[in-house]
Amino acid sequence: MSDNPYQDDRGNKDRSITNKGGSSLETVDQRFGNSKALINDPFLIGDAMTGGYGKGPDILHSCTIAAEKGEIAVIVGPNGAGKSTAMKAVFGMLNVNEGAVRLDGEDITHLTPQQRVVKGMGFVPQTSNIFTSMTVEENLEMGAFIRRDDFRDTMAQIYDLFPILKDKRNQAAGELSGGQRQQVAVGRALMTQPKVLMLDEPTAGVSPIVMDELFDRIIEVARTGIPILMVEQNARQALEIADKAYVLVQGRNAHTGTGKELLADPEVRRSFLGG
Image 1 (cartoon, rainbow, N blue to C red):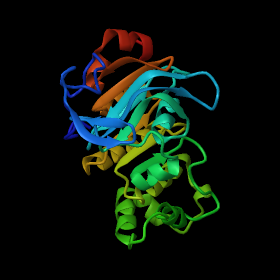
Image 2: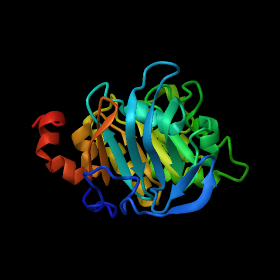
Image 3: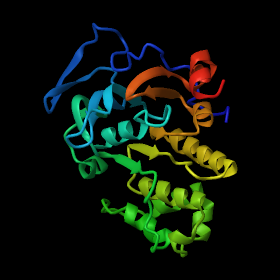
């Protein structure tokens, strides 16, 4: 996977993600809701998010995650660290009491998940992410529900990305293996032609061989320019393909850097990668 054109040393460890140029960074005089977009804002950013589910306690505490175009950003950390919660906060599935979510400069903090899909977010949850009684092709067609144009070219591109789905396009998705189901789920999200793709534990429960294949396909998607924001339990493997990575602990940013930087960080290796 070393031929990934986006694999470089863009990360940082001081977690000053929202203000890359320092405190003197100018703001754009362009309001989205009650906030201003920052010059050099990442394409997607959950900026200093604090929040949780319903009226319950906050799970995230000033948590920041971001992804640029063509970049794979990975969220890792121990169980209960708030990884999936951070992803859901970016997608609008829980309350963000402080902070903001911005997509391509627009404040979308108060939009519903459905509205965010229209804005260009593709989200693949960890479970219940396909229609098991429908065929593979019907699942993909469901992904195009917001489109009014001819989506056959997009479907052909997805079949090129996941050839096994073309072979099984008339088979019920519920009859597929776990890895093939994940391909259907990712393909359906791509049918919306998203501006950003978010994946919650895409390799959960699949074999190492299938995991490597899924990661290869994720790299291919990123090469088209789509930012990928991904939560992963398989931390070491995810960091190997990550352009940017976030380690969360108890809903807070603990470490930020490129995948290579965090793989080489003694504290990260000792605490999260088994030495």
